Structure formats: structure tokens, C-alpha cells
Length: 377
Image 1 (cartoon, rainbow, N blue to C red):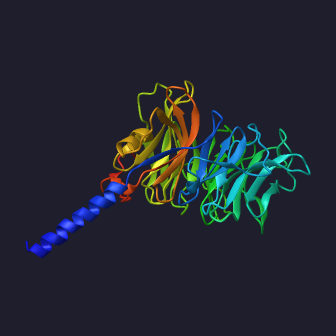
Image 2: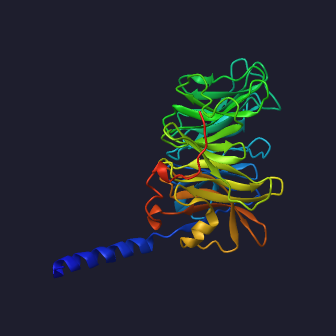
């Protein structure tokens, strides 16, 4: 090796060392006050978040540190405001708000320019329990909203809304309901559930370009599609009692359990990165209340997220992660709810976990490394 070659090699090692030294996991507690307060959704780049605190909707930005801002003109109600979603570009928020004219709660979309715009329900819809509809998901630029509306049969039916089409029903079974839970960035792929026509249990559902429902895990498997990657390629949710990830090339993959949390332990997939190599959610026993947020990757499988963050340099102190609700498109920012193991206080959190910290395979997307698989349609 020549002196010049040695110099280039040493320089490259030093540069790599400097880059790696700065690539450390971070953990930020958010200033929520309610026991169930949490970040529910992130923008695609992970720099903006939205959540619910004591029935009030708030917005967070990375530049704000731990601070949050509650949306102006928003009615707080923990019975009706239980879900919210943020557009991929961070400009629009979807949830439920009461219509000032009818007084009924309905799906609504918020932006800084327009405030709350109420979406109503189907033309022949009827109110149930004081509500006409419920907003659940929004696409990248806020032009498409999904959720469910009460139809003329007094059943919840999945909808897709845009300014040009209004609220379009996506169909349901004769005796039971359906829901659009999340939508891809371009607004073309809606995922959610479609209840079994005679038994009523949930079936994982996908609607593409407002075509008839695609029960992509079959017509008998109890399942719920809870989220879709912003590029529309990967779907996550729960399949029987375990979390799953699905794509058309690889089919259904059962992500398994953390283990050791009792006979009734179950896991749920909440969100997935665009390349499908990072899934987040929670695992635990819903009857005893013990739950832990997890990160799943092809190489490492399902691991408690707080342990992964700690190993990667983040300081969580006395806090553990109970639920992870969302992940950025690149898979490096996650958000949800953390609990203090000493005081039992609950707060929202945002954490970063750069992929450069891990060996090749975390970001490869190589399906051959995915060891937990299951059959599917």
C-alpha cells in the first residue's frame, strides 16, 4: 500500500467515524397533560406531528422541542375526538368536530388557511349517538380524506372524500359496517376493515381507485388493516392476535410477539416505512394493561423500542414506551406514548433512530431475511 493509498484510507475512516458519532438516537418527551395524551401521526419527513391531549387536538414541530400548540377554534371532547391524522406534507389535520349549524359531530379537515372544514356525511345519512361521520385518514396534500359515515341503513360505511367528488361510499356488507382508516400519499389506496357479512368480525380491506373492496387476506381471516405506507406498497395491522405486514409481492407476513406478557398477549402493527423494513406498533395484554411499543425489522424481528433506543444512545431515564403510533416515510422518526415507570405519568414522545446505526439489512428490503411468514391470499 502506497503512502497516498494509506492516507486516503485513514481519511475515509476518520470521516466515517465523525459521521457515525453524530448519528445517535434521540428521545423527546412532549408536553401533553392527560394520561392518554400522545402523538398520533407524523408528517412524511417526521418534522411535524399531531396528537390528542384530554380530547383536544394539538400540533407539534421539531423546532418547538417539547412544546405543543392546540388548534384554534377546536372543540375538545374525549368521547368524540379519539383519532387524528396528519397529511404527509404536515399542512392538514383530519379528525372529528361538531358542525356549528347541525350540532352533530362529523369528519372535518383543518388547515391554517381555512380552519375546520366540515365534511358532513352521505346525502341520505342519519345521525347516530350525536355523530354523522368520523374522519380517520388524509393523504399527502390534504386533498383526500377517508373514514366512515352513517348511511341510510344506520350503519357505518367507509368513505373517500375529495373536494371534487364529495363523500363517496366504498360499500359495506348487508348487515354490518366498514371503515376507511388510512390512505396512501396519492390518495389512491385506502385501507381499513369490512365486516364479515354474517358474523360481523373485521376483515382487512383495501380499496384502490374507488374500486370494489379487496379483502386481501381472504374472506374468513379475522384482521384489520390499520395503516398503509405513503407510497401505497405496504399495509400493516393485526391478523388474528398478531401484527402483520403485507405487500402484493411477498403476501402476508406474521410479525409475531415480543413474548412473556401472558396468555392473552397480542401485537398490533400501527405504521410502516416506505421500504417496508421498519414496522412499529404495540405488543401486550390488553386485559392487564401491560403493553410495550416495538420496532420490527427483517433482521432483528420484533424488539421493544425503548431498548433499541437506549442501545443506540438515547437517554429515556425512567420512561418506557407503551405505544408507537406512527413512523416517518424513511423509518427514522417514530412517535407515540411513553409512561414513567415510577410515577406512572403518561406523555407523548418523538424519537429518532437513524438507520446508519445498524448493520446492512435494516434498510435493504430483502424479503429473504424476513423469517416470520404466514399464508394469505
